[in-house]
Image (cartoon, rainbow, N blue to C red):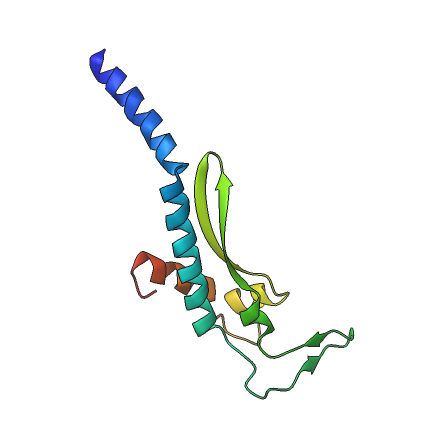
Length: 118
């Protein structure tokens, strides 16, 4: 029974560690690091000219890159960091289309943060 008590205490400590100010600071640091890395590898229209869609929307060079954000969230009792792109074409850039190969910006960013090159 004593071992079960130790396990219960360790479980409580583990839950408290995820909600600590240190965990939040580390999540913020890694989210910003991921944001910076993703912005360095994000594709940008090199012509420098805005692209007008048939709907009338003007897509300016760098819109995708500028939409990348590193955020810190408190979810399910733990601090979590995430990096995401919020431009309308983010999904196409990440996963590709029939006419454009995938770029995998977020996957490569996650690999960079984990310490691998993929």
